[in-house]
Length: 273
Image (cartoon, rainbow, N blue to C red):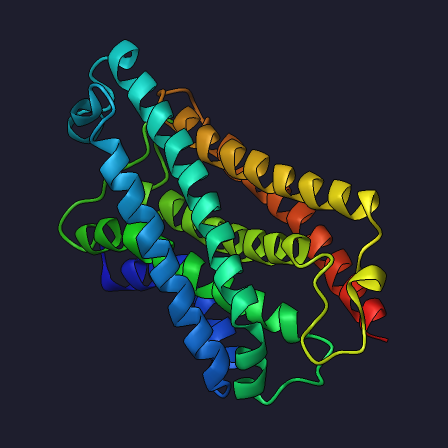
């Protein structure tokens, strides 16, 4: 693989993160610190997942030769994905609790207390750090390895390098984690007015309707995270051009999540007016 191809794959995977960093985080130290906190949260989630992975039967077959015996490797692989998704979402929810407890201090330190987008900024920064850390841990090693001699092609798309498909997957995963964090924080903040605002819990939430929206959104996050993770297994069989199916489904999910984020942002603005 040439240096140009290596750089192109790196920009494909991490280019959007670089743009967001220079556009929003570089000149906002408080958001940068929240992004670092989000990266730490991701490390905690992956550490817990790794510890639980050791308890899965035949887990070593997944890491050594996942295609050797599908009947033995697919069950532990699926179990690993399910455990990883559940742990990541539980840790993400726990991070919201920590942010909610210290929200007043964060707003005071940011100097952005009057902004309508304060919670959007906080959740976006946390999600940015969370998503970037997972992307780096998942993709940086394959990306560096691909810079050597030779180039491994995808078994289901024989004319496309594996690393390029991985770069596209990481890019979509980055957007997913940012939006899932924003959606989860928005759902969990329902009924919790911004500290220092004139809104009250009774005006910020509407009882059962608020609870239904909250649990519905949390269910959507877990379900789509599970879907995007599980469809990655479909890239393994050597079926012609099967590699595009997970990418297409992931892109559709990202579009739906983006629309929900936009709606939640507009809703937050209306509540603050």
